[in-house]
Image (cartoon, rainbow, N blue to C red; front, side, top):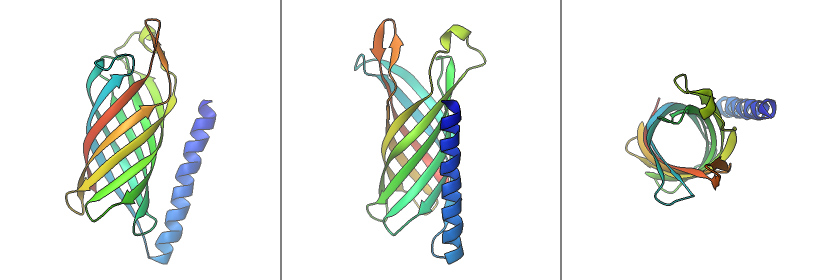
Length: 178
């Protein structure tokens, strides 16, 4: 399963790279790289009041403009899950739609790869890798800086204390384009 997920992610990177080289040759469109970071608020569907605390994320992204309104964004994010025994590498693949000069909506999928925190016991690490769905909005402060908010719907069920639990995330952050 891990080999299939790795191969799929690698193929997405290759596709974006090949497409970007063709576009740059035409000199019509370009790829913009940047960094992003912010805060996560995880919550669980077993209880509307079950929050998993405020966590942080940081990462890199590449934006490719397809047309005046549409674009693609590929990200590599590292999420720190305080006290959970694991951290996450996230690989979102997003389709963006520009509403106007300031606002953009985006949606897409992401691959979550979990790995054990160095300070945790082995019994705390039982999370399988999974996929998630993203839905968000971006507001451009300038041509370089932006803020965004995102809801992440995790598709994998977990079993905690005999109950099926699904974790979801609300994320707010800031980004800088190079």
